[in-house]
Image (cartoon, rainbow over all chains, first blue to last red; front, side, top):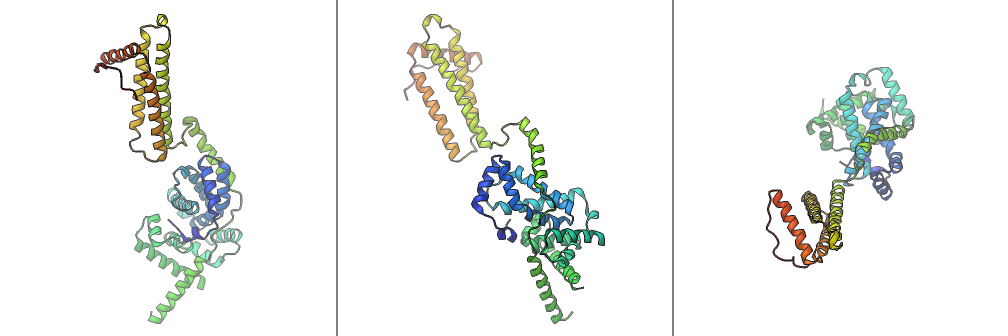
Length: 186
Length: 180
């Protein structure tokens, strides 16, 4: 899986490769270096997927723990960043499914204000109006839009990640963009 | 909705998609999350390490370790046998060849078991492992071949006797093995 975002990141490949080799041998300092390099990207993904700062922190930490445990199986077929990103998406989706916290997602104006405040703090350069519109989307539409339009996954990859048909992804994406357009146009 | 309106909406949707693609891809958490990650890693690894110290070894590494251990035991058995032969005849006992034979049989079985588990493995590390194993076997066979004829016969008879007792008779060696 190769989302555009992963290609865009500044990833000094030789240094990362060396750190990955050392981390695979059990060097936690090397793994901490990998964390320091990649945690902002994972937190941004988690924040948009969960819509909540505390849950985003939980998903970020769990994604790195899973990465540590899965490192022996990492064959370097994609970059470490891309691999880690895919892992984090799985963790975020599983977190949402297993804990069944849909009802706790952003549903009230207060929740949305809290989320907007966290987004403003964590990503000062972002468009708050657009972020709020995305966060207020229904779960299915929001997941598809975040993965495709913001994270850069292809239709087929989004379908595989979410376990839905490609046609459903396209329909959800159209719906999501339309809702966002209406929200920012108000 | 007219065609113009539909085109206009498509353009606006594309514009929204373009703006979404430009949203920042990084966000700084409010606190350092690394201590929590490190603590979880330590907590999950502690029981695993107690249960299985070599859990981070790959399957290939474990198999190669098995072979190395089996070969070390095999070579040890050969050396014990050789030491027995070199001892003066008066302190040699009838039990020594049996012990040697049993040791050789046991270590040989371990070697074969380890080798059979390698059938699905491939790669340069495996080739090196096989080469090392064969070299050691070659050396062991060479040492056996240097034994005097009567001592070698004694060992071979002991092996035959052991196998007969186990209900698996073997044809006794008719002559000295061909030197390598």
